[in-house]
Length: 346
Image 1 (cartoon, rainbow, N blue to C red):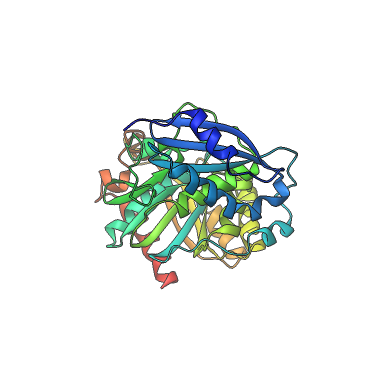
Image 2 (cartoon, rainbow, N blue to C red; image 1 turned 90 degrees about the horizontal axis):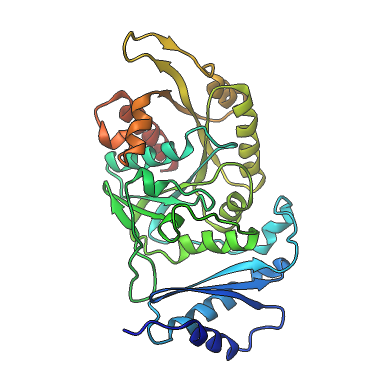
């Protein structure tokens, strides 16, 4: 099949007579996969979904096109996403009828092991007998492909939906499958919003009991897009025990509360360190801070995960410890957390 050319795509877009305040910011080609950037007024981002679908349908009908996607960019400074008024821009949330529960895993800051927790938690759900998916929504720094030892690009269905890759019994999707591992993601708010919604809406997830979503750290565009645009069962906060991490975790928790997403509980990661040689326990980051915080905030404390070199080694090797060492205390801890979470959702 002959691949489409950039000029063919541009000619088709010109023939659509796009609104005067919508500008074609770029066209990318990867064989039959076409990406289009539309530069828009960010204040109108919430009303642009029908246009995005129309453009995708138009491009998808061009000979040689196997998949078409549209992302939005701002051609003037976007208003802050921290205002509650943004919520009104997304009155209709994305609903995945065949996915029972979508669970966001978040942290107030980076470096607390959120992606490691997400991967192992998804595997724990699967080991507990649930059909599970894992979505890497960390647009700026996707790490799930490396942690799950997955490479390449997803296939597409006849109706142009991406098919999740599979590993360890999980269905997995990540922006990391669509871009080079070392490519910087310099995206504004509307583009982040469009990319994340497409990872839900344009993926053939199939029937799932649980979809675990690994969010980027902090309380920025991606987190608010998730909270305001997707039907979440709730969010899990990951923190290490020390005070500075708990301050940031509190910010993330308050953000979810502000946008009326239930917080399902707190996990204390890197809770303590057991020397593999002498068995001595060292509380490197303190201990129990997340448990105390959960009690103070009247939230469930879901469990604690020790700091251990095996967790790091298995994650770097592309086989998270819950899968690599299913009989270990770590795997048991993740399965116990998964059971608590799912029990609270039923």
